[in-house]
Each structure stands twice: as structure tokens, then as C-alpha cells.
Length: 185
View 1 (cartoon, rainbow, N blue to C red):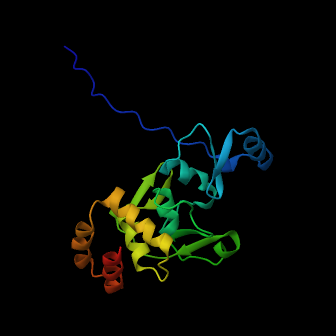
View 2: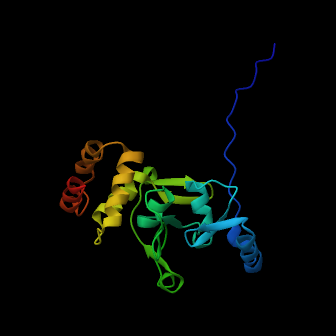
């Protein structure tokens, strides 16, 4: 007697890498209405605006060692309207170079735990919890940052208390700033 094999949910399809298309083809797709702007990149109209599609739209800025962070990660998670003037990434290995400033990319070097990185197809972004932490501890805390923090708390993390309960265990720098900004929200 044969046992039926377990049913597996199919993986969601990976969005097309439009940044690999020639510039003329991308321009034609935009003019025909097949593609629309998605941050600094483009996406096909037929693909919904989701984290995997937003990550694919800026796929040309990703490398194997790049993890989307800060406002760029908040944009991928749908917490802000745009990824910012400069895309922000954390370098997993090695040291960040200054080449990013010429290409509109800011590279940072932080230690990331395994639970702080989420794979989004072939790309990687900081988890919503780590993204919130990075936004709260940053030097700049504009109205847009506050809104992104509220969105992440509401839709991805759940509660301020749960986030604060985890914070003392970490003993991270800027803890007072983070707690003050979190209470301000």
C-alpha cells in the first residue's frame, strides 16, 4: 500500500529581473504601460507591489554580500513610500567601500544575527524588527522615520511592549535614544 506524499505549498514565483533588460527595452516597457516605476527601479504592472517585487526592482544594487537596511528595508517591507535618495545596505563580509557614494548606495558594516536577516527570493533584507531598531537608533529621526516605525510596529511586530522587552537583553548602544523615540511614537 502506497502512502500519499505530503502536500507541499508551491513557492511563490520570483519576480523578473527587469534591471537585466537592456535600457531601450525597459524604456519601451514603461512607455507602453507594461511596466511602472517602483522606487528607483521598475516592475511589471502585472506583478503586485509586494516585498519580493520591490526587492527585485532594486536588484541591480544587491550583491551576495548586501542586505537591504534602514529606510531601504522599510520600503521593501511597505512601511514608507520610497527607499530614500540613497539605497542603504549592510555588508555581510568585508568592509564597505566608498564606491557606493558614486552610485547612490550607502554601505554600512554591522554585525547581524541569523534572525535579523530575511531572504526575499535571491535578495536579503533586515527583518522588520531589526529595521525598526535601525530606524530608532539612527542619527536622523524625521517625520517619515516616525511613520515608518509606526507602520512596522503596527503591521509587522505587533506591540511596543514586545519590542521593548527584547531590548534590554541585547544591551545595544543607543538604548536610551531608542526607548525615548519608541515612547514618543
